[in-house]
Image (cartoon, rainbow, N blue to C red; front, side, top):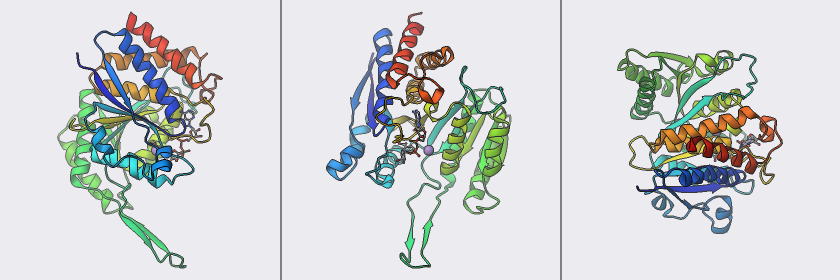
Length: 357
Ligand code: NAD
Ligand code: MN
């Protein structure tokens, strides 16, 4: 049996704390399941590294990562370092160079989680956010600085191939998982070039999946529908910016950023995929030991699923759900008084019991 090789990038703020707990849970599985082996290599790239070296990862950083089976990423962001460095010189190069063009973000309310919505309907859908182009482009610039006419132009890049591949991925997922509807987030009424191309390509792809309904909503209305009828969604596709915003909203409906995972997927498998909680480095709670590790542990579960161990992935999510439902080991964001480590250990113990059985 060959071991899965995982690159671990803990990052900044709460990133290292929550990542440590995810690794703890994976180590328990390794110890307990003779058919599962995994090895970790840690890369201390982040804001401290930047402050010491003047760049956030080594020049050959991507080369160092490219042969791993997957990447487990904490979060980056530090007051002393501009966000454009942490985002554009670390996260974006990994996502773009490793062609992780699918950002999968499950929005699923686990048993025991109280939603801020009164509605007690189950919430369980998947958002696929386009992850390689769109509004998150560095094309553009600033003009007439220091003048009253100062302006900034930021271009959105939408390509036919880019929309086609994310849409296909979403429809394939829908088909495999017996879903009946895919919802597309658009704004082609106002953003008439890029979003019209988005719509056209999505409609074209949908034709190949006749049994799956395509629903297209303007992003503003869709944000409202997320709140008004979250139970009606099955699969959602959105551009980079729209997907980013919708999933923080979605996360808020199912317990918040502390319990919301994601995967940056390279569907072709020619480069590693990367798994990370959707939250950032949370400077407001960093160093206090109270960050919720569930989002990152769940992200590790998505990673195992991606690596072909659906059984172990399910065990982790079940363990998380049991700990939440029991309700006595929770971090403050879920109304508890426990620490990051205590929650990680409680989940690790449950995982152990689940794989023993
Ligand atoms: P954030 O996600 O870090 O925090 C938003 C709020 O959610 C904060 O109140 C925080 O305390 C809370 N929160 C987040 N994760 C939590 C957890 N695990 N447990 C409990 N509470 C949690 O977003 P922000 O404050 O807008 O950004 C902070 C920094 O993170 C910025 O530098 C930003 O650029 C960066 N960021 C990085 C990533 C990434 O690494 N992929 C993603 C988003 C933001
Ligand atoms: Mn975000």
